[in-house]
Length: 232
Ligand SMILES: *Cc1c(COP(=O)(O)O)cnc(C)c1O
Image (tube, rainbow, N blue to C red; front, side, top):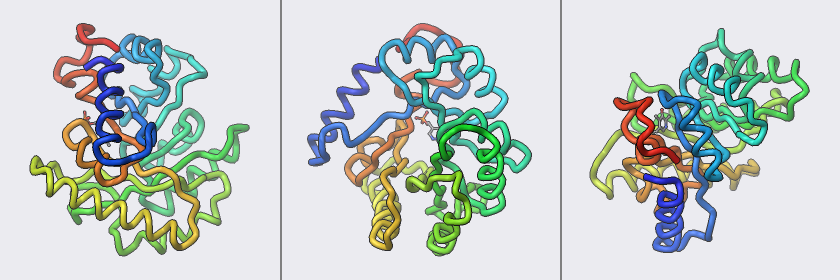
């Protein structure tokens, strides 16, 4: 899909579900796709890009060397990778452990960059294979962020089970939105709910996402990564 077409779809769904215009932003998930595709998408106006694999991301960040681009790390954070992540990204979506938060904070402190924007990843389905904090441990984790002044807690992220049923998708997203609202009621200044991918973007918009993480619907299948046919 072209960027323009995807933006139009998002605007149409915002209207359908009575979301304020432009309240849903797009994070272009560019993992496995080459820097040339990112450059073309950036030329069409996209600024936020998401990557999962550090080495691949650093190669592309360096190759593009474009200060307008905003890089989001959305994959699991290994503790020996916190320094380059703190140095090269503006956002981390996948924070789920205090040990990693402390390391990212320390490494961010060594830079001249503003605080790193972070989202707590929540494991809604209780799937042991997936990263993310259990919902019942979320409040306790959120309460620790005052210790980490170089991290700015902006909200929550989840990677839900891949249900194809629309109502099942909505139910999962609603659970994350409720956790988000509870934190806000408790006084946290949060503005970012990172939920919804290519397969469940409509359900996510219906339930209050503010940041869609879209790969396949924008860049095509990752099996054909490197194919330049449907750029931008
Ligand atoms: C790959 C990935 C996406 C994008 O998924 P698509 O189905 O390609 O839209 C979103 N979020 C995370 C965490 C991912 O790893």
